Length: 443
Image (cartoon, rainbow, N blue to C red; front, side, top):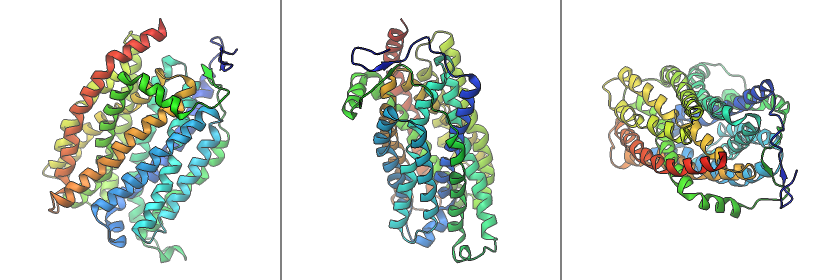
């Protein structure tokens, strides 16, 4: 049927896709997401050889992960989000996977800071398609009562990707360093070969993505372009709830990316661990506790929703994250690497717990024909703040304030401890307005 504007409105009686189809699609999207994080994270284990070969500072390295990756990852999400709302979402994801894989390959060939900067721009640009397109498709695959768990599982795979990147990356660094590589790889430093190797799985997954089935859109399905002005207008109209949501999750993202980028450097510089040791031990801890945090967050949100809590995603995110500041603040200050790792474990769990709940909350209060663009605006904000400032603030403190060899530990501790209470109060402010919107929609 159609509404007064001529836009198609999905019938309420149209059945949802079968559970088997929905979970299969989720598995394919999750695999693409895992590989995107593999390309994104591997650089953090290579900080020392990259700095040495390209002759760059901590601040310049943070720009590779912050401005180069984060800025373009965020800004390109806006036009991509617009395409997600208007066009088939499968080819958007396929093109994105190819772009970030090829850009990762060329990262291994960069000979200057400027060339590496451009390669990381390409990685960010390609990965910008994954989140808005996947969120939109998942929301059309799963009924609302299953959406929190589905999105939490999808988000959980982000952390699986990070954990595997640390473990596989650490092992690959040591194996490739000892590898008697054939020509022309023999002419490249080991860290360059690592980038080339990790780029290959993304290219190989494209045939699997081609098997993905596009789900029927739910709710209002527009037959004409929805302008970015309308998306901004929607965010402004819902500003009482969306502004504090964006602010709260920006702070969570800031602390999360600061830790993701600089924790390996803490273990290497402060505790004298090798890159292989960091990849193996920290990677295992991350692989266990990060997905567990995301899964717990989505499960608790679904359970509270079933009990009638209209603000369940924000409630779980706010109260679940508050402890991350304590453990994240003390972990880098521990006297040895084992104690630090023990403190990082609960910090990781509590940091990742809120991540799927942002996507769940935004999808639940956003019309179908604006989900891609509103999600893209959300990505723009949290990544400009989180990726743009989180790693950079830590690096600036390290270069200018805590200039000793182990100064990175104090910089990371400050950022981790400060973000948690600020994020808590932002999400607390959004909760009553979120409840009001959800109550009006289900009345």
